Amino acid sequence: MRGEEMPATAEPAIEVVGLGKAYGKVRAVDDVSLTVPRGEFIGLLGPNGAGKTTLIEIVEGLRVPDTGTVTVLGHRPHPRNLALLPLIGVQTQQSAFFPHLTAREHVETVAAFYGRGRADAERALAQVGLTDSADARVARVSGGQRQRLAVASALVHQPEVIFLDEPTGALDPQARRDLWSMLRELKGEGKTIVYTTHHLEEAEALCDRVAILHQGRVVALDSPRDLINRAELGSQVLVPAGRIAPELAGRLDGVDAVTVADGTVTLHTQQLTRVLAALGASTELDGVQTRAATLEDVYLDLIGAQS
Ligand SMILES: Nc1ncnc2c1ncn2[C@@H]1O[C@H](COP(=O)(O)OP(=O)(O)OP(=O)(O)O)[C@@H](O)[C@H]1O
Image 1 (cartoon, rainbow, N blue to C red):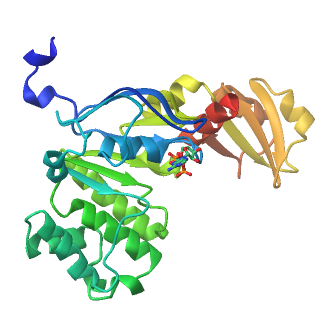
Image 2 (image 1 turned 180 degrees about the vertical axis):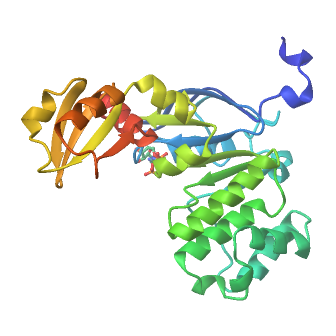
């Protein structure tokens, strides 16, 4: 189907083609192409310095690429495109605040910039769980509350595409889970969400797809489930030390490798059932745990192989 024949709804939320950005000799973003359909929740993962922030900020229109093109909801963010601003919500790692205002006044002020009113501000504060502390001065709120305030400010005008750069970094476990629920609700409303994180279990739980970046390049792009299945990292069987000698464990049917750490003998296998059967014939299975591969295993395998 040619581009001009596509119905408006089929137009992707984001289209990035051949994007490049260097700082001196550092290729922060190196020939990245990526299409994000509308309504997708996509995670950008990668080690420190992989280029996540540079990529997301180019797409937001906050940094200018050296090469390539970006289209967001049919608009070009560069040169600075004011028509795009009401359609996108942006939380950066350096989100700006009005320190002398209260959290509520801050969000109301941001709402006013977008021609929105108090009801929108209250809704955004409630979405991030800040209603009860909305009268605290911005300068005095905790790191986690500040982060939630930045997210509220990105959502207040009900944008179509939401960009969040490490939104859960400073949050306590309960606040993180609350933000997850809120992000899932936004996705349920059909919003497109692009976010960066170092929390791989979080990306696995939330994202439709993840892009793993390394040295400015996308080295993997797929759903967490498909990445895990394709990596064929197998399973692990964790046996309390003392139950079985590592040498004996290594000879059990189906065991590929054995590691010993922290009072646990870990059997690595692609054939979990076979190993459990063999193990059950030699020792009690009580207290034995199994662990399937996770996105974190895939990530570490991939990044380790690239380094
Ligand atoms: N303004 C800048 N000037 C010079 N170099 C920069 C600038 N911004 C980023 N870089 C470099 O570009 C590379 C990519 O940085 P970027 O911040 O995009 O990575 P990241 O994946 O977001 O890292 P982190 O996980 O640490 O936030 C790094 O080597 C970084 O030092």
